[in-house]
Length: 140
Image (tube, rainbow, N blue to C red; front, side):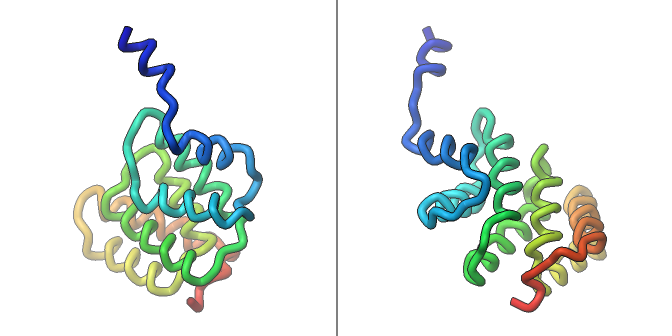
């Protein structure tokens, strides 16, 4: 009974999640706002890591405004501090692409002075950033 109820449940965000998977990049402003909010909220539920991976990959192909880049950089900084899940490397890849100078400084500080897993995550993100020459938003 519980299994049947679980599989039959339709969430109000399912439509956005399906659309997020279907689109190659997020040109629809409403879908882009959903994607950014989804990462900001950082909900943890069944398969949420896979959804975040998909969103993070597609954000690299999306034309972003400065305010959106700033919001995503805050998400990336939060990822260093708190998000050590399976999608973390996708956060690192996005950081290499959209990381601003302030994000880089925050990650460098965490890599140098952080402790435990926070320090490890910061070092990993920093490696991705340093390897990349694709970053477009370094001056924001």
